[in-house]
Structures are given as structure tokens and as C-alpha cells.
Length: 313
Image 1 (cartoon, one colour):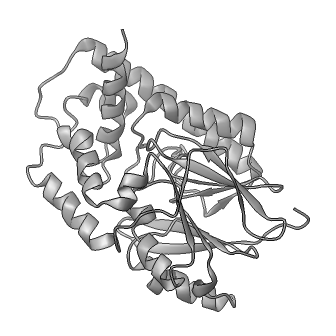
Image 2 (tube, rainbow, N blue to C red; image 1 turned 120 degrees about the vertical axis):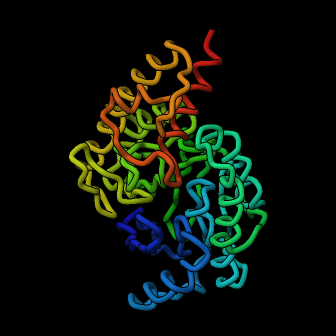
């Protein structure tokens, strides 16, 4: 790559936190992550028009993972490109793009076991209906290790960083070490104040891989994730901020892991606490957030530790 390829953030509001998508201004333009159903028409199109670009010209839709706030606008965006864009997702998260019901199944298997909400599945189903613009088959499935050509000498490499979801990937602009990680780098979480991931070991491995192998000069996060002092990072992190975010993400994972293992060794506790059966984890970490607010990262993450703990001899 002979010149730096411009990257333009495309920010969409949703709920208690913003959704970050990114326009890669390559010969074959790409958008990384798509927000929700309304994001392409109401957020992306006018933002691109303001910089003299057209959403119709997008040729790549690169999805970092399958959650509704990242794939919800994929079908709508694909339609706006005249169905000419390649829609890319890791094969492990492709079910989230193909079917709204996959999001309900994920809820049922994970955080739904602890939320004590009889309407929980119905709420997730309603959210999927509202914010996913359409079910679709991806045009390109990846596993990691692929290199995608965005025209000219611009290439993007695909790096698996599972943990937040089984199919989370980072897309890296080759030659300028600009990494788009979606939700694979959680730091201290977003609005909920707690990092969310389904597989703790894979999450940690992904963070170490990003820190030691990718070593991003520019790091683009999926949401305004927060530092230890509670202040949010911006849309684009420079090299020093990227190192800090990765280091803090690893630090908080270690703290959560210790608290979770202590709690799980002590055995289940049946209490009236909103954090039950993981009340000791919240106490040890000093966590006072509302664990019931979607996307419920507290229960998502602790369910992951419990699964890992139960499988360990």
C-alpha cells in the first residue's frame, strides 16, 4: 500500500450508547459493521453524502460479528448498493445473519438462564424483528487468515479474535495497521460498565493476539468503551491508546476471572440479589450496575466462566 487509505467513522445513535461503523475509502469502498435497520438510510447515507461519497458505491460490507447492532443494517445496506456489495462474516456467526431466531437461541443459552425474566425471550425476539432489516445469506464466509482486495493495492486481512462471540474477527488494513475490532476489545465495558464476552479463554487469547501480533497503530472500536476511570474512548484510538485499551482489557479480564472462579468454587448461591448466583463477583469487583439491562454483559460473561469452569476437570 503506497498511501494511507482514509477511514471515516459513521456513528449511529441507539439506546444508551452509540454504534460505530466505518467507511474505508478504497477503490472498492467498504463499510465495517452496519448498525441497526435504520442506520444505512438515516445515518450512513447522509454522512457519506457530506464527504462526497455515495452509499450506492459501497462494494464490501465487513461484519466483525453477528450481534444485532452490528448486522442489523446489513440487508438494508446491501439493498442500497443494488445487491452488488459482498457481505462478509465469519462462518461461526453467520447464523445471526441468516436468522433472527439465532439471537433468541443465544439469549436462551446464555444470559437468559440468570435474568429471571419470563418475558426475556419475547423481548429479544421483538428487538430482533425491529432492528434487523432482513435475514440473508452472506456472500462470503471467512474463518480468518484471508486477504480481501479492496481494489488497487488496498488489501484487508481477516484475523479471528473470538471470545465476545465465536465468530468475532478483526479486519486490518494491511500496510497501515488499522484494526477494526467491533466488540472484541471491551476494556471496562460500555454503558453497562462491565465487559461482555461468551468465551473467557478465547477472549483473552484474542486480546493478546491483537497486542502482540497485530500491534495496531489505529484501533477502531464498535462502541464508546470505557477506561478504568469511566471515561469513554473516542471513535479512533491512536497507537498509545490502543496499547492502553488492550492492557486494561486484559487486566479487567484477570480480575473478573479470579472473582468468577472463587464464586464458582464456592458453589451456587440462591439469593434475592439481582446478581444471583454471582453476587460475590459483583461484591468483589465493586460492580453496582444494573445487570438486567440489555445486552446484560454481567450475566453473559459470568455464564461464559461457568461454562468454562464446568468443563474443566
